[in-house]
Amino acid sequence: MIIIGERLNSTRSQVLQALESKDEKYLVDEAKKQEAAGANYIDLNAAALLDKEAETLCWAISILQKELNIPLSIDTPDPRVMEEGLKIHKGQAVMNSLSGEIKKTRALLPLVRKYRPRVIALCLDDEGLPQNSDKELSIAARMVSLLEKEGLRQEDIFLDPLVRPVGADQKAGELFLESLEKIKKNFPQVRTVAGISNISFGLPRRKLLNRTFLVLALKSGLDAAILDPLDKEIIAALSAAEALLGKDPSLKNYLKFIRSGKCS
Image 1 (cartoon, rainbow, N blue to C red):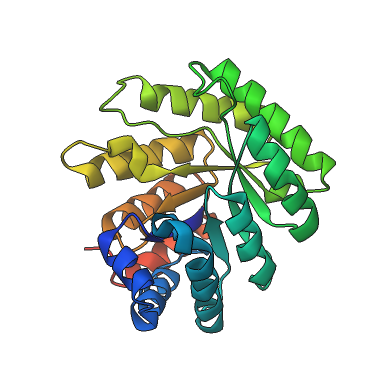
Image 2 (tube, one colour; image 1 turned 90 degrees about the vertical axis):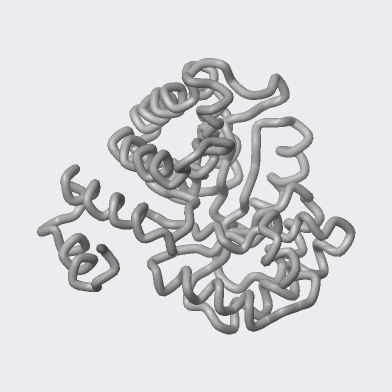
């Protein structure tokens, strides 16, 4: 499982305050804790700063890359800000995110061609959120085709079937898992990714729902997850699920995790 650490998002009040005040220590500490907990990428979002987003994002990328041994996932809805971030990022970043919306593809595909990031591609188009798995698969196929034409390898494409809150739609989890299975069957070399905590939005005992959903998604073909790597329970569930599903040869990672003392 590829883990994208979600904690440096400006929707969190502490992160927003740190970005506004240019609190380098807080941001670096948060990022380093996620790296130490096993994150492969750190997601960085400064969108809540509005007109100061580009300046703040670039400042944060610069200081974080001096301290981390892993790359960043640049998370912004603004193509102009995305380019500023990709321009200064050293090594291969993740573009979070592209979608099938025509305006979005026209703005972001040239950046894929120029900067060669890995790309999170949302299964979303100008018709809005798909209402069935066949529609999600159709959008996924279009995204793969567009990105391959730009020279991107399938392994650098992360398809996101979009997790919706189960509290708003009781079929949301079922739709996601069904879409995930179809995407992996048709595009086995392409990565799949999900923002795990979206499933529990607005509900009590969110961590219980999140870790259960992650295990189900892993069984259905999930390759990468945007989550909090400091959540010991979800990491424990992930480690156990990989062992039980035959995704951990010789149980090396599971035994390492147990010996680390991170599991209660």
